[in-house]
Image (cartoon, rainbow, N blue to C red; front, side):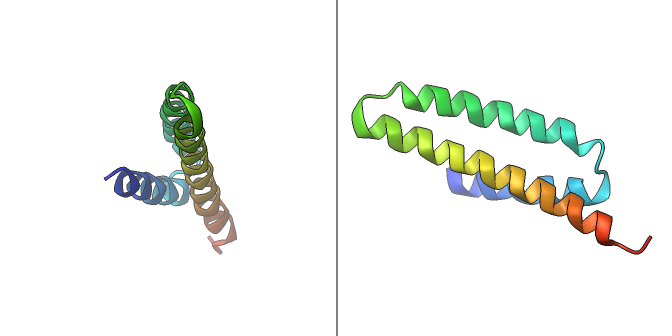
Length: 80
């Protein structure tokens, strides 16, 4: 279920980055806050589980940022 939510966030950020690039920065910052909060909470788990949770939320945040920038880049390449 978490994977589906991350995929939905990535798709939403890519669409927003393409349609409204300036306004989409607020959505990106909001998702970054959520991912970083989950990353900090996950890192407090003991042992390897904490590292695994922290790393997975960090990679999810990176994927969301990358899809957002891809949407903005695609918008910049459009001829209009």
